[in-house]
Structures are given as C-alpha cells and as structure tokens.
Image (cartoon, rainbow, N blue to C red; front, side):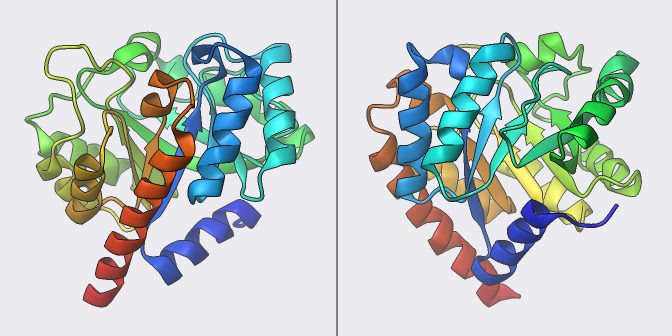
Length: 265
C-alpha cells in the first residue's frame, strides 16, 4: 500500500519540524456538538497539526457524521478517525487510524474488526494509516473494551518488544496509550523510561497518548522519544473553553522539542 496524502503530510512535518501535536475530540464527552466542533477549531487555531475524532463507546452514526462534517468545514489540517469499533467510520474524515490492538486477548481487536471495516473504508476512500496500538496500565475504557493484556507501567521491555513486533508486522506507526482514566490508581502519563525504550526499538513514527495534562508532561514525553503526542481529556474537562490557550502552549512545546530533536540528528 502506497503512502497517502495524510501519511506523507505527517512524515513531512516530522522531517522539517521534528515533532507533532495532535488534538483528540471524543464527541460523547462534550455537552453539545457545538462544543466539540468549537474545541477542534480552537485547537487547530492554537497550533495542532492534526485533529483526531473518535472514542471507545458511542461515537458513531449521526453524531459522528455531524461532528466530523462540521469540524472538516472549520479546519485546514487533516481530520483523522480514532476508531472504537467498525462503526466509527465516516466519509467526512480524511484518514483513519487502521489500528490493531497488539496486546489484545481477543482476536477480534487484532484482525477481525479490521477485516469487517476494510471494504467500507476503501469504498468511502478514507486513507488507512497502519497503526500498531499498545495499551498501557491503567488502560481506561479502551483497555476494558479492547480486552487488552494491559502492560504494567514498570515493564518497558515488554512495551518495546511489542512495538518492535508491530513494526515487523507492517505497522507504519506505533502508539502507546494509557486510556482515559485519570482517577485510576497508578494513572498518569506513560513513564519516560517506557517511552525511551519503545522509541529506541522502532524506526517508524511513535505516538504517545494518555494522561498528558500539562506542559511538564508534554515536554517529558517528547524529550523521552515521542515523535507525536495526542491530547484530548484536558480539553474535555473544560468542555473546550480553554482549548485555544492550551493548544497554543502545547504547540509551543512541540516546536521547541522538535527543534532540539532535529539538532541532535
């Protein structure tokens, strides 16, 4: 499969800027569709390189179509689906994380859901981004829904080996994610030791998600090895009211850390 426009866009920015910052919108977690759309728009105005839309439960049908269509009309960066299941697909998106949960216990989440969704994705001409998805403790909703053999936070070598296997299997992106469960015991961003171990084991772009809520966490993720960081929950907590301010701060850190990374190359 040839690289599509969105994948080429990601590689171009990583090559020229060294790091990227994605904003994640889960429409279910906003009070209104208007709030979700406005948040997406404001994060891009603040500097987000790409907008993800999706979630583990309930993001489908008219809700997904309406919000995706409206967001697409308001932004000038790619809109990419972050699917929770085969129903999280809409023709209004540019691309989709075509994900396999590498540490799922249930084969449905490794290949069967992907098989069921593939014909629809091709028919709607949505660009698939081959993503190996790894769920780290505590896992949140996605860990439960995805029936994951959740990786302990103190076991970076397991995450690194799984990421390596994902790349060998053909995934062109790897993501590690703690899930959206900030109140869980042992929650928080992925430990820097694990980020470093994963990045050191692969040659494809590495995305880090989950638990990042402030500039310190973001800077640590990039300095530990993340190429891309995706952030969503912190916007949801304010229902998007501070989206522009937060996104501007996050974008600034991405640029600073990306510049540092390029100088080391």
